[in-house]
Every structure is written in C-alpha cells, then in structure tokens.
Amino acid sequence: MSLSTSPSESTTIWQMLDAIAQPVYVKTAEHQWIYVNEAGAALVGLPIDAMIGRSEADFLPQQLARQLAQQDQFFLDSARQSDAPLLFETASGIQQFVGHRRLFNIDDSNEGTNSTNKAAVTLVNTLQNMTALACAREENSVLHRRLASNRAELHKAQQLESTLKRITDRVRESLDEQQILQTAVNELVEVLNAKAANTALYDLEQGTSTVLHECAAGLAPMRGRVSSLEAYPEVYQLLLAGQYLQFCSIFPNPERGRVSMFAAPIEDDRVVLGDLWLINDQGRWFSESEIRLVQQVTNQCGIAIRQARLYQESQSQVRELEHVNTLKDDFLSTVSHELRTPVTSMKVAIQMLGITLQQEYGIDQEALKKPQAQRGLARYYSVLNEECEREISLINDLLDLQRLDVGNHPMMIQPINISAWLPGLVNSFKPRAANRQQELTLQIDEKSPELTSDLASLERIMTELINNACKYTPPGHSILVDIASGPHSMKIRVANTGVEIAEEERDRIFDKFYRVPSADPWKQGGTGLGLALIEKLVEHLEGTITVDSGMNQTTFIVELPLLHSAA
Image 1 (cartoon, one colour):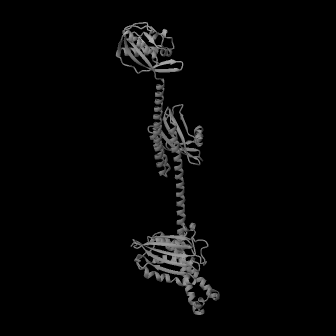
Image 2: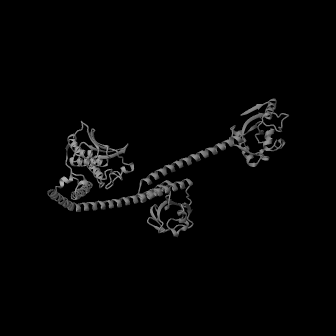
Image 3: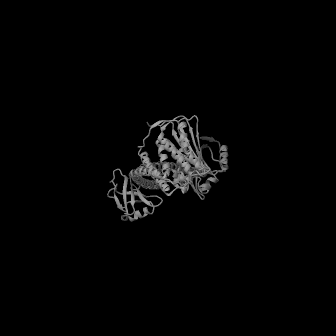
C-alpha cells in the first residue's frame, strides 16, 4: 500500500509513529533508515542517532540484517507481507517479532523528526512481539507431539494386550507341552517381527537344556539340540535366577552371523522350567513394552506347562487306579466263581442236615422258641444256616455287579402294573417291621400308569431299599414307600425317619463295600454292596437314584422312565 502526503500530513505521520508503543522504523527504498522510535532503539540496543541514515547491515547481526532486508525488499517489490519471524537477542533472551509494513510517498521532511533524507517512497515497519505466542505455539506443538506419542503408545499397548490375551487363551487351551511352546514361539515371532526364536526345557538333575521347538526361517535348525547349563554359566545363572537378558554378539555367530539376542526364563511359582530365545538382526533391540509382553507370555507358558504336567500325573494316577480296580474286580469275580460251588454244596448239606435234625429231634419246633431257650443243637444249626445264606447272598451280589459292569445283566422288559404288584412286596416286610416297632406304609398315586421295565431288576431295587430302611430305622419310627408318576417317568421314594446320613457320607454310600459307621441300630452287619448294586440296576434301567437326608429323615429317590428303550 502506498500513500502520498504533503509536508503537513508528514508531520502528522511522524507524530503518530512517535505515539506507537511497539518498535517502529522507517526506511527508504535503498534501505537507509530515516526514522526509528524509542522502542525500536531499545530493541536493537543502540542510540537512535547510531541508526539514522544507515542500513541495517551496519548495526544488526548479519543473519538478522539479511533476513530483515530480504523481507523489506519483498514488500517493496510486491507489497506482500512475509510471515517469517525475526529473532532479536535482548537482555531478557531471544524475542520473536513479526513485521507489519506500509509504503508512504513523503514529499518533504519535517522538522522535529529524526529524518535526515528525502525520499519519494518510504517503508514503515511496525514490529509486533510474538514471543509469548510463539512459546505458546511451541508448547502446543510439543503437547500435540506428546499426545500423538501417547496415543501411539496406547495403541501399541492395546495391541500388545490383545496379543497377550490371544496367546494366553491359546496356551491355556492345550495340555501338551510341545503345543504350548510351539504356540508361544510362533505368535511372538509374528507379533514382534523377530528374525528367529526357539524355546527349550531344562533337566535340572542332568544340568541340560533341550530345544523343543523353533521358528527360524533361513537359519540353521536347533531343534533337538542339547546344551549343558554349565557350559554357559554367564547366561544360565541369570536365567535360573529368573532374570532376562538382552545382548549383541561380539563375534559373528558361524550359523547366524552378528545378531542381537533376548532370552527370558520360563518358570512357574516354584522353579525355572526352561527358556525362550528371540533373535534379531544386529542393532534391533526390544522395547520395554515388548520385553514385558515376552515375560508375561513366558509366565503363562510356565503355568500352562505346570498344569499340563499335573494333568499328566493325574491321568497316570487315574490309569493306575483303574488298573488296581480292574485287578480287584477280577479277583472278586474269580473268588466269587470259585466260592459259589463249595458254598452251594454247603447249602445242600445244611438242608439235608435240617431234614435229619427235624426227623430225629423236631428242630422246627425248637426254632420257634427264643434263642436263649433253644437247645444247643438248634442254635448251632440256625447260625450255620444264616451264615451260609449270607455268603450266598454276598457271592450273588458280586456276580450281579460284575454282570452289570460289563453290560451282561439279563433283562426281560414287560409291562408292570405297580398298583397290583408292589403291595404284595411291601406287605412281606410288615411282620418284620411290626416286630421292630416300625410303621411301614405304602402310598401309590391312583393315576399311575403301567411301567414298562425289567420286573426282576425292579423287584431287586425295591427289596434292597425297603430292607435297607428296615435295617436302619430305630424302634418307634416310620418307613414310607411312595409312588408318583409324571408325564414321562415314575418316581419311587423310600423314606425312613429317626436316622440321618451326614453330608460327607452321602457321596460314598453307593461305593462298593462302604457302610456308614455306627448307623445300624439292630447290629445286623452287612457287606456294603446293597446300595452299589441298586445304583447299577437303576442305571441299567436308564433311571437315576439320589439321596436326601435331614430333619431326622433319610429319603432315597429313584426315577425311572415309563418306557424302557431297550428291547
């Protein structure tokens, strides 16, 4: 912008310039300064007279003088402003200014000003202090860079966290040590863009490390290599102490060249199990976040390997227990078969003895008397007969259990009218219950449909349950047999009062040979096979059996399908 002024107008301009608080200077088109105000002189650090009539190259630092002259000339030529800052070194430090320029045509100089030259065209430059704004912009720029860096770090942390979760899930899914290590190595090589990786497990008793898996495209394979821990004490002492290490080879490796390496121990909460190595080109180092990722992955590997080993140990124990159980069952089966013949012969002999004793001594009448009133011969015969029956019952139970275990138990599926069949079975126990001052009751839902199942198995189940209830019910208490039907199943409940089964005993009452301690008020003894046999029979009939005990009562609940699927 160019303005023409008269002498009187020029006087007004100089007065206006004197009133400006910011640094101002006026120069000719030939770069001679013809005016500078007090603020401008203070900024330059020279008296006003030392600058008037001279070029900025005469009193300003050369770099600043060149920059100022270039900007002024650009404006003189094109009337366009330059936004490049000017840096003035002052007592308070470096200050930054931006020029605001105007062009004037001054016809005559005016007394009272510090002008010494007349010029057709002059340039007026008002310098605005931008130091605070520049500092704010710089701080803002630094803040933006920090925010960008933080966002990048956060994004990387999220990626690493996602990677850790994925690796952890995959590692925890496996119970195979080889698969666990292979997953960790492959995932880390891909995520960290490593050149190669391998992992090994230690044999601390032998003092060796064996490489089990590796990912090393283009490098010499190491899988299966066995190293002595004592051969590299400076490395393995740190790893065995649970510390990681990162280093660069001083001399080129004959197989890999000069590389940088990172090693982390694989450990559980008790001992170091092995290590994981990552190999990179020389000068490629892992950051702290990447190191934390590797450490967390190796920790998860340690936990997973420990779980895998515990699982293998448990499986070995299970197989051993199954083997022992098989041997026990085989032994019981063999013994049962071997005893059946002589016990059967004993039973026949006892029956013949009973006939003889009846003919000669009338032993049947003696059996009706109380035990203490019976003659010795009758008591001996009674004990012999009862114990033989018990042995036969034990042998039959063992053989039945064996047949049920192998699925060879005979069944004859037929319709069963519970309302017509069950009362006769229950009534057969009533004399025994009455003799023991027990109340035995049967309840059958009138709408109960027919049950299609194996009558022999069902009869055995009901006999054992009612016999069991009579056996453990104290005098003065009751036994209830209740039958209820649903749309697809029949529920049989046998409940007796006056007795409870402790919670810790309920899981064991269906085990073979297990008897609840001190729960037999009649001291009848038993083999502990009854409930085990019932459970097997119920399963064979495609049903379920449960026990509920509390409030001075115990209830066995059998639920059977109304229609058995087997033919």
